[in-house]
Structure formats: C-alpha cells, structure tokens
Image (cartoon, rainbow, N blue to C red):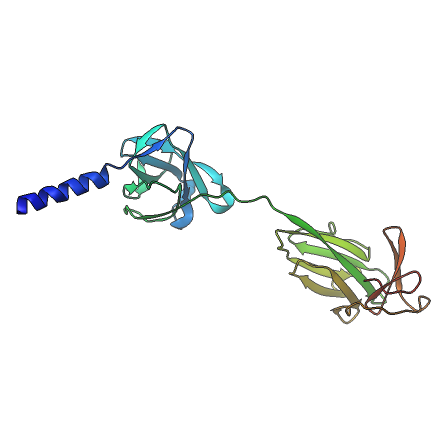
Length: 256
C-alpha cells in the first residue's frame, strides 16, 4: 500500500510539473520590477530565464510604472525566473525562484527574491492622457498699478514670470488632475502679492483684493450698473464686465 501511495504522489507531482504553456514567439510576459522596491536600483538589467535554460532580456515597457516586457520565444514553457544583474550577460545579482507559468495571465505584479510564489494578472497598457480645459475669470480689485498672475505646479500655465496680465485665463487638467499655485502680483518684488491654489479641475471665478483672493458668488439672473466700477475685457469678441465677483454682458445681464 505504501508503495502504491508513493507511486500515486509521484504521478501527481509529475503531472503538475509537466504543464507547459505554448507561446508563438510574439507574446510577452510583463514584470512590475519595483514590486520589490530595490529590484531596479543601480539601473539593473532585467532578465527572465525560462525552464532554467532559455534567457530573455527585458525591455522597459512603461517607465512611469517600472514595467518590463519579456518577449517569449516560440515554444512550450513551464517556469520563469526573474533576475537582476549589472548587464544583460552578467551573473545575476538577485533572482526569484522558478515561478510556474499559469495557463492565463501575462503580468507579474508581485514577487519576492528566492521565492517561486508570484501574483499574476493581465497587463493593461496605460491609457492616453485626456486633457480638459477650464476657465478662470479674475476680478481685479487690488488698486495696484500693475496686475499679473503667474502659475506654477502642473505647468507654467500662463507663461514664464511675471505671467499673464489677462483677466480671462484657461488651464488644462490631465486626466482630471491639476495642481496650480497662483501668484497674483504687481511685479515689484515680494510686496503686493496674493496666493491661491487650484487643486480641482473646474472653472473658477476669483476676486483679488490687496488683502486676499476669494471665489466669486454663484451666478444667477441679475442686473448690474455697468457704469459702476468694474473690470471690463473682451471675450469671444464680446464685451464682458466683472463686478463684485459676477460676470455680466454689455447689457448688464449676468452671464451663466
């Protein structure tokens, strides 16, 4: 009975180890190399060894996410071992164990040195960045002799210092993310400056005084005396008036 049981275990083990996945020579296996934080240190070359015999050098697929791609030669393979080394041909500094290649999945998202355990997923390329345009309307109630707005952060959205002297400005957000630090100033050194941070991708209606920056009130249906003190500018070939944080057309109707 013991002999039969031992033989059965051997058959099961052999069956488990005999699984091999077929590759056509164009398919890739991907590795998130920084899943072990130091794996990419020293600009290490990335290498994969299939069935402890066939070596494949990795190439960077997605630099932002530290993902390497290994094009698998045509054939049937059961295991893959990832290695890091000084060069593609040099002896490995570090290596995983021989990791079983699953029937499905092509992206190793977690692994450990000297371990045959790994987490597999399906690699999805990063999508193209989607940019959206948003508007800033500025009311200048500072009384300064000059008035500029400079932005730094995600970009220099309004040009290099001193920035723009316009009261209608646009900025772009990448995939809905934006960080802009606005400096309203008179371009006279550290004096006469007010700051405002933009961290939400939306339109802004800003009122700037010598004491600070506030967002204007929500827009409704109202009339304004366009002869009263106000900021006026041309937008889309139309006269636009800004007063008390609200925007009006030339007839005095508030714009929505």
